[in-house]
Amino acid sequence: MRTFFGQLLGFKRGAWEMVASVLIALGVIMLMQPFVLSLFTYSFIVTLVGTVMFVIVSHFPE
Image (tube, rainbow, N blue to C red; front, side):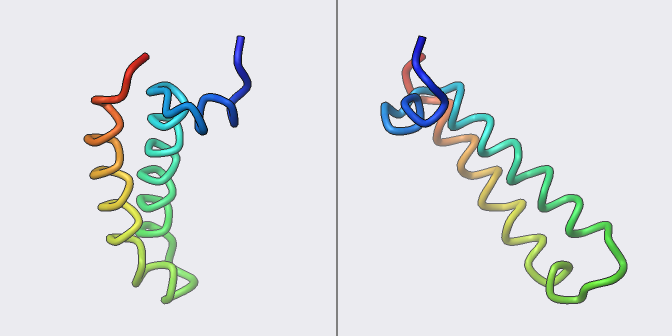
């Protein structure tokens, strides 16, 4: 069994999908927080990058 970073370097789908999902969740959390304006400002970009990344990595091999 390969490690998480080994799967990232080997471009395996599971690890990269997890990274993309974390980016999407981070973007939504950034969007919903009311305290730091810079986090709110970049929340859409982070969510968009995570979504596009998820679409791309869904074509990676298992």
